[in-house]
Structure formats: structure tokens, C-alpha cells
Length: 133
Image (cartoon, rainbow, N blue to C red; front, side):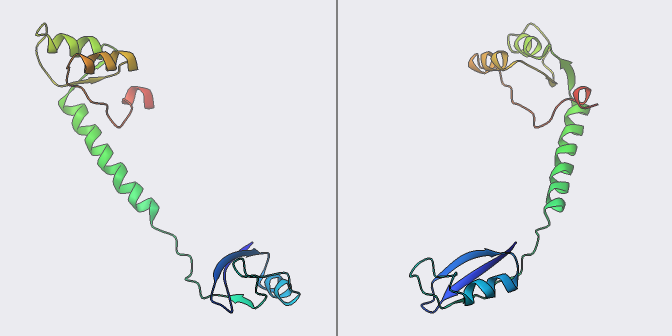
């Protein structure tokens, strides 16, 4: 299918999809294509800019690199406490454990309870490596 921007004699613009250029011309010439706004049968293709694909992969690549750098920084400067995250974070907050940088995993209800109790935590934008291997 080919997408065409169409225009009528009164300069109304609308879109149409056709199997081919010949199909558009055949349907137009037989009176099957009319303006969606005013009903005019005097319809032709409007000037269109060519579709140019964005460089999406390059953006994703740089974003991935930034996330990888963040992950590397957190993993090298923090202790992974795994599923004991909520327990360790609470113990440090209450002074029962030495304060240090940690990361790990917590169930949503445990994370919510930590936040409600004023324990300074934040979700990380990645899954621990032990879950990605």
C-alpha cells in the first residue's frame, strides 16, 4: 500500500491509501476518489516529503551506554545485598548497622514501607546482573 497526501481544487488536504500509483489514478479517473471535506472529485496528489527514518538505533545505543555506565558505577561503589535489601536499608536507617552504599531487591510492599518510614531509597533503572545472565 502507498500512502498519498491528497488535495482538492479547494486546497483541502487529506490522506489516502492505494495499492499503486496506477490504482490511485484509475480510482480518481472513475470518480471513486473525492475530497473528504467538500466532496469534490477534482483530487490530486499533494507534494509530500519523502519518509526518512530517524536514527533511532544510535539514540538507543547512547542511552544504553549511559545506563551501562550507571550500572557499572553502582556495582563497583556499592554492596549488593540481594533480597535482604529492605532489611539492610532499615537497619542502617535505624542505626543498627554501619551506613554504606547498598543495592539489591525488594518486594513492592517492602519498598513502600521503607519510603513511608522515611528510609532514603530509590529504584534503579536496571535489573541486577544475577537476574540477567
